[in-house]
Length: 281
Ligand code: DHB
Ligand code: FE
Image (cartoon, rainbow, N blue to C red):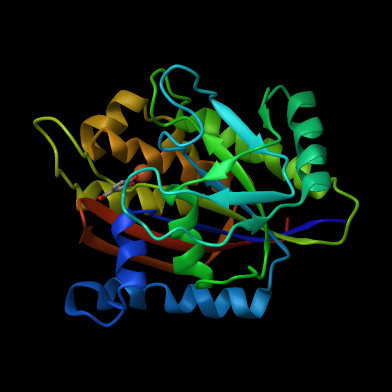
């Protein structure tokens, strides 16, 4: 049977991708931030997941304001990358796992999560930046990928609570798959940031750190926040942190913290990274 080997969360700031392609890993601005990923890479090298489910919002590449699914999952055997406007280098595409995707969608829909089914899907910085910062850059990626898109762009957005529940249904879906594969769930986006308007540039470090602790130890507390409350504290794009709750919902009630790191600012954003493992239940 498929097994969840752990969960990762990471910000997906486009500037990270540019810093990596420009060789700025050890630049003063970037060094502490990238150091925060060394233990994650070591963990991945040890655990070697076969498939990563990457929870990322689409930033206008596949879906725009005219047609915006709340939750969408890729069912393709291949996902190509495109830059939706940040000037990022386009990377080699990713192999999918179509049978696993279809199994998860069957299970999720039966569990009342009516996913939009994407037999074709391209992936933008929200997906690709986490991939490169976690796995490095590859022509042939060492994991198969399943993109799970959450609408964090066109209101009304799903709540943190709904994302947490989706994560729980995702766990049922993963653990009922008959193949012996090791699965990691990656929640991307956040933490606090706002890219436009009068409050552009706000970062609330205290709120971000509180969120990290709640997501680890008391995710129910995070689910009690309304989207308005999250955006008031974390900025309009800070709402992306609800995608971390999909990852958290897929794990056991209590979790082992393998690694946590926070660094602000990177670009306009509070950048957090977490690695969690299941506790035996
Ligand atoms: C930035 C952060 C994001 O999450 C994003 O999607 C785009 C830009 C930033 O901080 O620059
Ligand atoms: Fe984003």
